Image (cartoon, rainbow, N blue to C red; front, side, top):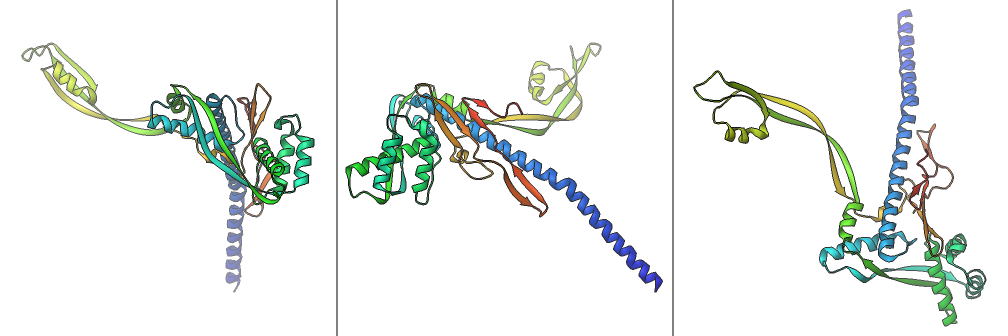
Length: 331
């Protein structure tokens, strides 16, 4: 009986040890896994912002201005490239129409007229960027925007409709058309191909065969011999150059090499959204005759997710790019 009790005690102790080892492993490994995941999201988000910055610069070269409507910027730069693939004559001054955007608002006639007359009179939309976005989002139906430029287009169209039609109120759908005047340079396709690319570096193992041979000046004269090793790629050339070549041995060598591939990275609308939250980046234009552009991470404050009950995934803003300068360069 004593032996049975002692065996149960050993079994319980062993179980406790296993549990403690498991807890120790979790404490050491799970935070590391979470940190790596945070870093992966951070790098992907910052890469998206850098890609959007490239898109906006190409769009600027075409239109002589930036746009806060990132989807349109991507559509335009891709459409111009595709047009050049279809016709080499698509250069110089061109006009391009992209799909319109529809937005439904709850319109209060007096309120919208009063707000626009008092807020936007004799000023640019950039001066009231945040107020425009908040106003539109407060009256929006099943949608929202984070673009002051688009919000201004919506409210201006709604204002014009209210002024033109006294019955235009309540829930109304506003459709904004987009036509862009472009100047397409002859080098656009080449610039596109070199701008929107990504590099992929992979490790590969290469096997090569080398030949050990004897070369004599004369088939009958064996005193003047020369021996050498050469790779397989030179085999045909060596046989052509030296008639009196005799092979002694072969050797297979194994070498590890890094290969860098350049792959086209065509602009996609996935770049518009932060990979962690799925919310769109804020694209904001400031300035008048000289425009300044800022692309900001959609994370505000601290983002947290509970992981494995006692652990937490947390992150803060992934930064911003302003006029080409990245905020995370000093980190």
